[in-house]
Length: 95
Image (cartoon, rainbow, N blue to C red; front, side):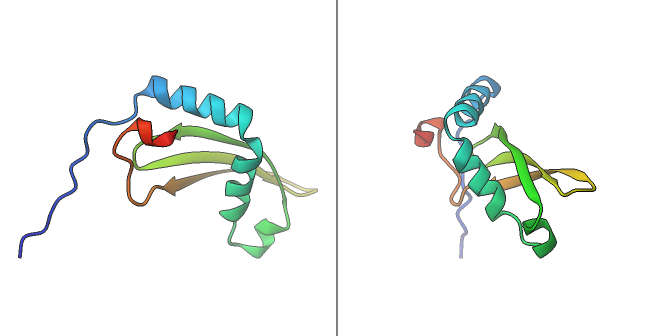
């Protein structure tokens, strides 16, 4: 039996990634906050204050979102990768 290999045609340029991230960070702050909040699996982290959520990069395979978790004593920077399943075929699918 032959398995088919997915062929990736191109990727999202760093310029396009920056434009998309700038747009998401400006117009969809609540969406990024919700994505960051949904990534928390540890009950202790869920009790911390989440702030500064932002999209750092996007590719055909995933997007990276960073945020800060804090309580009264300390702050911690987090970075979460959200995979696209299936991966995108082009940046046109992001619209």
